[in-house]
Amino acid sequence: MSMEQINYKLEVFEGPMDLLLSLISKHKLDIYDIPIMELVEQYTDYVRRMQEADMDVASEFLEMAARLVYIKTVSLLPKSEEAEELKRELTGELLEYRDCQIMAGKLKETANGFELYTKGPDEVEADMTYENFHEPFELLSAYQAAIGKRGRKLPPPVEAFAEIVQKKIVSVQSRISYILTSISGKGGRTFSSLIRASKSRSEMVATFLALLELIRDKKVMTTDDGDDMTIEIKRS
Image 1 (cartoon, rainbow, N blue to C red):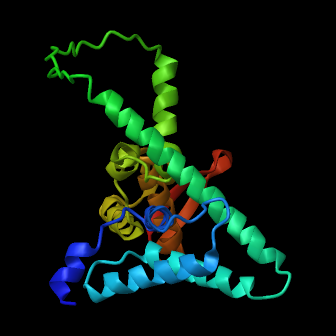
Image 2: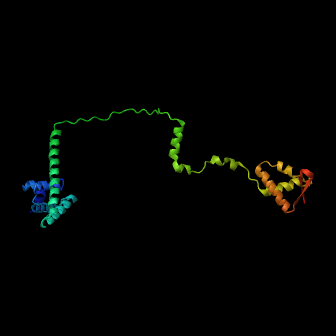
């Protein structure tokens, strides 16, 4: 038998259940009491011919072949209750598949009497006007929910550092030069006048530290004036 003859005779089945029903009907087997030995041989022989004809044999067909061979093997054992149970399961599946095929055929016949009409979608102009009204606290809640934990970990805005950045940092060394310059040629200067001349808290602190350093290095000397403790600063 040539390959062309085999391809011509082999039918195409939707699945293993379809093939089993065809074999049962063709060989007039009893679907309620399937002779499993005969069915296994017919099924495996058909699958083998499908493979020889280079047909695309789906895995479902091979899985059913293994299932039938297992049922046949179990059936050879004496008093095998498992074999009877497996045969009942297979019979139930075949009956259910057959009933579905019958109902599908009837629905197909019924549907042939109807004509199908279709209509294209109508174009509808969308109104994009936003008409909802939201209270301020609703927007705040939505914002807090949106930023979540990730938003709370963001760095502070640049504006938060504006006040700090704008403040001038005064060095102690610059105030030392200022003090020495201010008391030269004058004979001295009071402590309070130097402090009052400071333009910022940073400059005031730097002036005080500069005086301490000058006194420690003995570059200036201090003298008090009576009970009001007016300190006069002079160059050493």
